[in-house]
Image 1: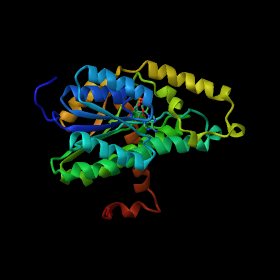
Image 2: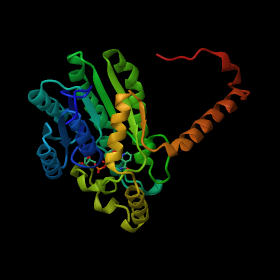
Image 3: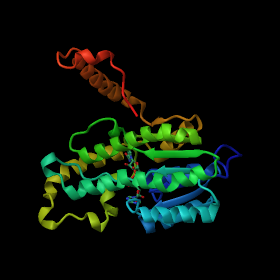
Length: 297
Ligand SMILES: NC(=O)c1ccc[n+]([C@@H]2O[C@H](COP(=O)([O-])OP(=O)(O)OC[C@H]3O[C@@H](n4cnc5c(N)ncnc54)[C@H](O)[C@@H]3O)[C@@H](O)[C@H]2O)c1
């Protein structure tokens, strides 16, 4: 266990903590002396992972949580307060990959699943935990786990990319909102990390099941799934990601990247977006608006 630091004695609620990135972050923050509320939909994996952390002497409780159900989030907050008194940090990490495929092969139920877990799950986590972080006045952290996919489009992965772009935008909206409360808000955008994200369907809830007659031909999905598996398996280890996140939180970084080699991708995108403005400035229809004030609210 480390010496006293900005995390020690404080409490973090982490969704999707039974495995992968959520488990690695749970362990890294527990090692800094935090109390950890591990929440996940997968009860068996959660029991095993939490036992491992307890056996190392860390202060951990577990909560059963489907992030798409706000009432369950309220239960997590109540259990966290009962166990540890206060909440200082929420890490909205639970997320699913969906299944890659062409536009015409998209299943509405899969899109709803991805959007509900990856977007509504993040909103509900913040809605439930932010009031608890505000109420003690000591400040804290909101960390939303997006992806590089939230900063770039990827063919055949529209649902995942759209959901992660939403997480980036939500975080950008919450940064100025939470800053006056001394709540540091940041977004984690990793590229590939070696986890079980490519097997997300293992925890797909019944309510998002696709009717058999509407289900896409499995052969069509196989090629995309194979490419996704290879990419994830080539990813960085979760321990490296967790170490990087600690480094970034300590120095209050807001966009937290784990793969600096992707900078050329976001630069290219920023340039393409900017080029669109050059076209608008040169437009005979709207070019005269160039010196108008920017309107926000
Ligand atoms: N692995 C990568 O390459 C990668 C890259 C960028 C971003 N991410 C993001 O990292 C986050 C964590 O994913 P991971 O890679 O560790 O995958 P993972 O599948 O190994 O872990 C995800 C965890 O979330 C849980 N979960 C799934 N649905 C849930 C729900 N409805 N409610 C509560 N828990 C639920 C799972 O049970 C699992 O424990 C996700 O948001 C993912 O999109 C992953």
